[in-house]
Amino acid sequence: MRGVDGITIGRRVYISREDEILLRHELAHVKQIVENGVVRFYWRYLVEYLRGRRAGMSSVEAYRHISFEVEAVAAEKLVTGNRSFGAAVARATGSIARSDDEAMRDIVEEERQSERARPARNPKG
Image 1 (cartoon, rainbow, N blue to C red):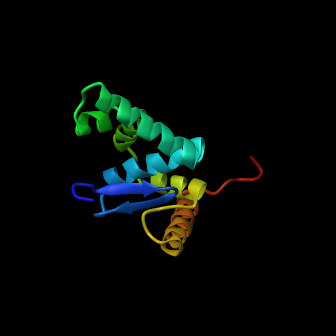
Image 2 (cartoon, rainbow, N blue to C red):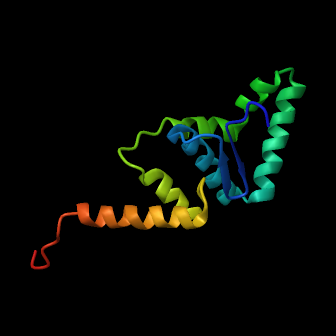
């Protein structure tokens, strides 16, 4: 679609470019779909959009007023010092912008790096 940088279909994310902010936005939609269910998410999304249009909003205004979009825009602003946000969502949903195999390799590698970064525990207290 013209002018669309990313789209979430079910638990799959498709983005036009590698961009952490865009990925956060789309992964917020994955989380919303997981929490609401696919049918309910898309039904509410459509109903909210149509209500905005019937209220006289432009297409862009109606889109920006959809509660799921408001939440996804807020997720764009989350500050993370590493890639744990994307990895956490990927683990929770089994989905990421790339293939599942690539995502799993990245998640495993991030987990390994995280384990190495943690200080060793002294079992004797």
